[in-house]
Length: 303
Image (tube, rainbow, N blue to C red; front, side, top):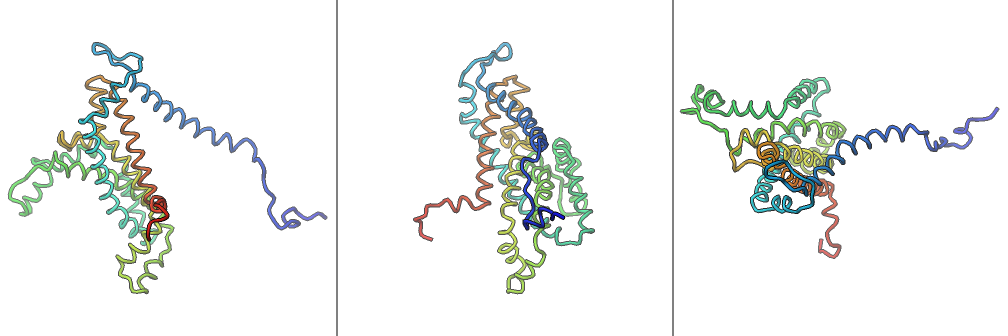
């Protein structure tokens, strides 16, 4: 009687090829990525070089006027405001999401369910609903300040919208559920005894969290930061609804050029510039979180 190949050789036989099914399964996401991302990206990039007809729409051509205008002083200043707001909202979101997710994963599994349901429910709200809801809550006529007046904490109701902090608050509100769900798998796989072990070595809870837990999850935190940054940077309803003209971001101006002024080539060039800048910053955040930027320092530098 012949022994199985696994028993005779002491190792599992290797499978070569695997048939056509792996290639078929990989073909669908590749095709979807090509059709839904690369093709529209190519069209938008080419549209930025087209020539606008003042009395009509636009015509096919190759001009650099749209990209030159997208890089003028006004749009660069708007780009700086957009990046600054997105980075501020990302930082505040992480400061809230990281400890919340850590404490959530340390609770029993059954008690985590209500919190996760609440996070998923808040994630289902669209940007339009969030923008107009916070506009109502921060208004002077029917906002939160009226409740504070009724409680005797304020003398008269005030309007907090439009304003800078109203925009950041709404950004954090829409990005916080996304950050929590992105961090949850990594924090749930952490050894629950690590903070306790740090405590037995004399470290305070906060010190143990910063020196033991955060280094283990820094890559997940960096990836979440890049995701939140890109998500917030592309929002346009919240800055337009809750912010003043000084707080309007590049997506607001892209929408204005495409819909109100019917200048699609300029809107396309602004979108390409925004895509390039956001991609570079997101890659820098991921590399910084993974420690590759620190390892890329000159070898001759003194430790």
